[in-house]
Image (cartoon, rainbow, N blue to C red):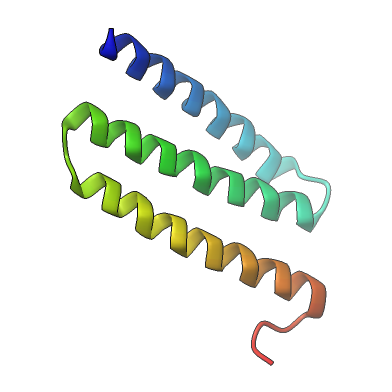
Length: 89
């Protein structure tokens, strides 16, 4: 039962990553690309968590937490650069 749920989760996240990659490459504007990159970070966090569940590794959850923090800071920096043209005031 757990293996089926993990396979479904990996397939769903893989499809979501493929669609985000398409938006990242074909996005009409910079804001669309930033949003696609942020969504890709969230999907990769989901993949890491699923891999941690499948492998029974507690280190994967810490890696997911670190990636969440770095992804948030990166998104804020991209958005600030897009709005003001400068990250550090």
